[in-house]
Image (cartoon, rainbow over all chains, first blue to last red; front, side, top):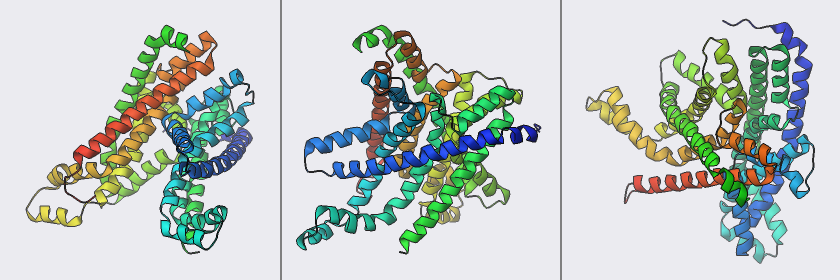
Length: 218
Length: 218
């Protein structure tokens, strides 16, 4: 069995925790962007104009068919070519958000399609506005169907946020790599970081099941 | 952009070929390990389901980038010296095994129990039931999520560029750093990944149609 230097983990605890905080901040902001942009995309996927539908479909296919690393490199290293000059962290948040939006769009689309057309026709007949139909009729009924895959997608997003370390965002994986470089140890930093992600993701999965339960029985 | 393509198409094709080999090997090895994992998860022999559950929990609960770094840095620590290419294939295989295991478990559970009972009554052995009755039917059921997983692995294979495997992403980075045209290079890389994934998705749909039982209900 390989010996584990607990002193080293204690010494680098603050660095790892700072990384964890950055990971949490990045993922929270990226999730908000991905959810909102995903909702807009899902609505555009159902637009009446073929051009709008086609453009939304193309966006979703490109995001789902391209690695997140390519998207991040395009924004971070290619961004200056089209006037986008940002620090690594905002680029990471935008990249994760735009990337996740493609996946959330498909989740929401499936949710919209689950609602019988008759209900929407009836709502129109009684004079509800399109906005009201979305917020009052479609979204509340979709929740039961979209919460489990959405939680799943957020978990995927958290795991993908590790890739931000490659464009030098000082999140959990980046700080663990720094710890490995400074101490020449590999077991302690990578085990510590694996455990932290594992706990974080288990916590999200559990809260997801709790939300799912609440939504189903609301 | 066309200039970059004209100057580097050989290198890009070579990189794409490595990407295909790495992901293809990982998916194939993951298939074997995933099948074993699925039967382990469904087993009734005491420690086996718990052990397999622990394996699944770790490989699904930590970022693939962290897993890759763990495999790459810890194998030499354990006295096993491997080339980066091998470490990449090992890490991706162990990761996809957990996801494929879960897909196969769901597929196996969807096969009517009566079929297994009938086969047992006819005196067919346990392994023959698995090989001739369960696995063939299961593959037809799980083809859509399996193709999805293959696409995810193909995209995640871009991460092995971090451990200096010269696949598509690594080659693109090299070209970007010599031409100083990151935007164009990563757009090309993204397009190649997208094309590979579209081909994979299309092949999946064709295979699904071929494997469908004519006249059977969905």
